[in-house]
Image (cartoon, rainbow, N blue to C red; front, side, top):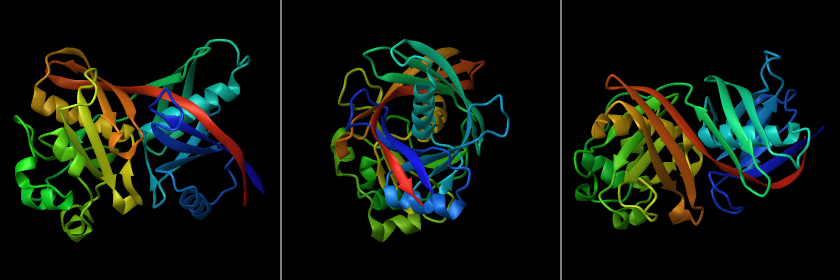
Length: 303
């Protein structure tokens, strides 16, 4: 059996930056173990397997794998898969197109708006399938700092402190005082297990208000070694969940608020994620993320 696959770079307008993604088509006959084996072979942060939808009104069913496990939802696989399916289904690739791609994911139905324009990178955006909620507590700051190779005094800024939120996937959100400290951060395997492993966490999302680009609101890094991802260039599901952190500490007034997150710069894979928060009566009402994606390679996998 041979299956077609594509790779895309997501949350970027340029190839060879952003977060790489593999999309395997016509994967209905693959067993879960085969999908995981392929994800390990391709060794990207995520691989998407496209299957026929349970509801014919939807575009496709998708399953998302890291090299270590299946996950219920992820942002850059959702955006990248939607862009690819919109491009492949476009009646005339040379014409501009706006499309809604409905994806059946383990977390639920995700409807993605895709904008295709001649001479421009495709753009995709979607509402979060779940709103973020606090999902427990984290170890003391000393343990967190040791796990990510920093000093306790480098953790936190203003009123921001480490928190744990979930929106399908659960993350430890770690505020870091400066870009200088962010550049030093790394997974310290000697302390990571005690602080982060075995708690149902997808990974640790480090963030600071100091940014490389003046148009960005936050600079971020994300470590997920327990899922086989030492560092992720752009983490859409973490960006969705980060909306809960922003609302908690920044006390946003009612209305729409846009925040731009830059990530992957330390990896040489600069990525830009657009995050929009809608606040009503002091509560987070909706979260939307978006970003560009570009196709890079295509080929066939022999099973």
